[in-house]
Each structure stands twice: as structure tokens, then as C-alpha cells.
Image 1 (spheres, helix red, strand yellow):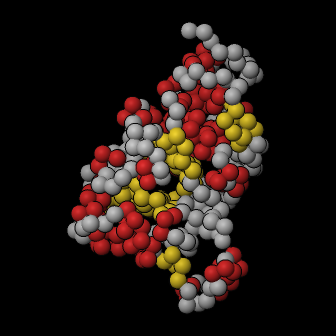
Image 2 (tube, helix red, strand yellow):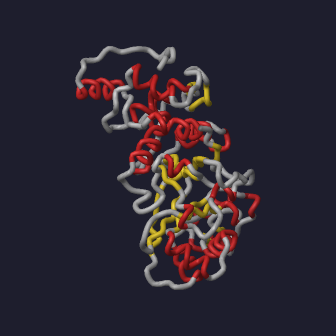
Length: 350
């Protein structure tokens, strides 16, 4: 196989895995975990999997606003532990990452410390064994772990997001290491997420969205849609964010759909109940809310839903057996223009 011509700077390091990792750590090129050395051969094999020009630029990554070329993406993919066949997903994820709608510059610089959550839909989930079943948000699947980690390394190594300097996260959270799941389309009673967004069912996609915390929405007792969704709504934190993510486990999804609820019904039901009451806020907090959203004409009697509109709630079915769903909070706030960040879905081209 002919090796592509690469332009990245070369470094000679002792042929010892510990020495290589020490070198990369000293340079600030790792996330704290060990990396796979991105040798010319490994990077070449990774690029060959997509048959692209190594210098094709997918987008620019803030705050450095540096170009994310196929070659640089492949280098970070190797470091993260990705197999070459993961590259189409990674490239599509970088397209989403650098889409202005996501507003990555703000996500990289905020004290909130959000992660980029990736949601994969379509046939490629099965082809690459991207987990959407049991423990989908946990450990155990190479594709999930390394694809998500690659995006974080790209944010760091291409974009220049370094904790304590350009990255201002006060605490961060474990999702910043990696956060990538597949939707469990086979277990969902509703249309898949990407179909809801206008893609064909047999098209593979990846969605990037800002996520800065996760709350377990456990409910072992409810046997009705109203019960499950009422309990879920109690876990959803306000006030009005740009979007919100409901990761509904298959058991809860069956109960909800069994009572005739569509996805749109789910969103409307939860939106009406997951609210933030202005009367409960301290005076300073209330005053700031009024200043941030003058268009809402807020008073102490106002009630703000979790998002500005029911359609801004993302409903994803994932997980295995059990009655454990999760609410994932999206960083940022709603604005009259539509929000400080918005999720982006891109087609995966194989």
C-alpha cells in the first residue's frame, strides 16, 4: 500500500513506550492518559482508510483557530487509540465540532467545563461496534472510548485548549475525557434521532452537542408514561438552556410509548413540567435573569421551562435492561437568537 505524503513535524524518541509517553506528556500533547505513538506508518494507515488527501482541511479549531487537516486528525486518532476504520466517524465529528452553530470557541473558554458529547446513528453503529446498549455511557467499548477521546485531543492539540490557560473550566467533569454513544435504535419504539433530523434511516450520522453534567433518572416504580416522565422532569435542571438531552432507557421508552406517547408528546409533557420558578430565586440571581432575557419580561411570578421550546429537548434511546435513564445538561443559556450553542448533526461518509 502506498503511504501518503505527510507534512507534520517529525520527532525522534527512544523506542520505549514509557519514554514516548513521557515525551508527549512533557509537550502537553496528552489528556493525562497514555497514548499510542503516532508513527508515520500508523498515521499513514489511518489516512489510507478514508482515501483522502492528508492536507484536506475539515475545519478550524478555536481558540487557536488552527486548521484540522486529515493528517492532523489522523495523528490524534492514532494517539487516542482509534482503529483506522473509525476515521469516517471522526472526520464527520470534526465537521460538527467546527460548525459555527456549536460555538466551540465559547465551549473551549468557559469556566463551566463542558464536554463534546457525540451521538452516532445509522448502520455504522453496528459496523464499528459503537455501544448504545448496556453501559453505553460507561467503559468497555473501544470505539466509544477512543472516538470520543480523539475529539478531546483535537480540541487540545489542534485547537490549543489547555486547562488552566485557554481552558478556564473551574472543575470540568469526567465526560471531558470521552463522551460518545450510539443510539439503541433497535430498542427504540420511535424513529431514530437522525431520522427526526431529516436523514434517511440507512444513512449514518454523528451529532455533536455540548454537555456539562449527567443526572441519573432512576424510576423502578412507575408503570405509566405520566409517572416515568413526571419523575424524569424532576431531575431536569433549569433555567432555560439552549437544549436538553433525555437519554431514555429501553424499559422506560416501552412504558412511555405503550401509553401512546410520541417523541413530540414526550418533549411537550416534560417541557411543561421541568420548570424554573422565578419566585424561588435570590434577588441577585433574579435580577441577572431579567437582564439576560429582557425579551421574556420576567417577573417574580414567571416560570421558565427547561428550554425555550419543546423541540429543543433531544430524546435519545440508549442502554440495556433496567429502569435507569439519564438527563444530560447542555452548557449555556437560551438567548433571543436561539441559544449560546446548538447541536450539529453531520452525515458520515464512508
